[in-house]
Image 1 (cartoon, rainbow, N blue to C red):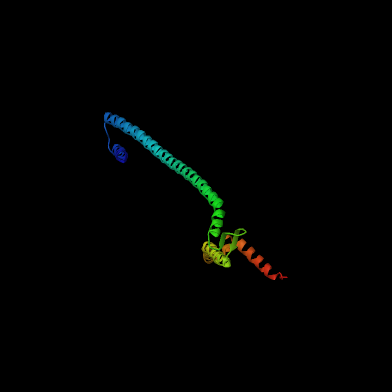
Image 2 (cartoon, rainbow, N blue to C red):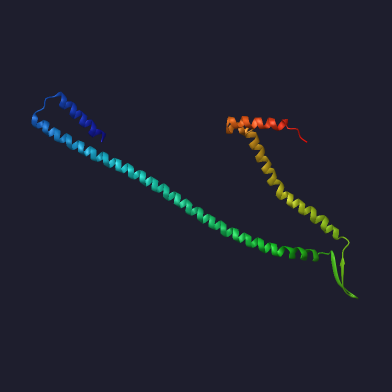
Length: 193
């Protein structure tokens, strides 16, 4: 297309500088108008192709978004099913845990159930306190080993935030920073009872 434009300019320059026979000038004018018409049509086709490419690109983006939404729905459904399964397993565990605990205690050597002369005789060992002396600290240790790391991570994140942004009010807006400083000073002046 660029070559055609250059050719037209060259034709116009030659036509202006040289005297051409009238019949050649008419032919040249026809050729010139045909080339201009073809250039106009080609220009329209190029614009249509650009619009179509843009439309196809938008459609592709929409289809990608649709696929991502469908994938998110599938993941959410799978998570819901897994959650229901975990709830059922937790319920079963909660139902069986007390029975397991009681059978564990009664199955230990802390209790003696033997038939006596007056009927069944139920004796508890004098060392039963050992069970509680081991169980209570172990339960506390288990709970702490679960809770302390999470709490330490929370404290660490808060410390990192404080280090990275020591004066968050100044970053939000200068007026908020000055009003915050003023409120800090008024709090200091109020006597504590």
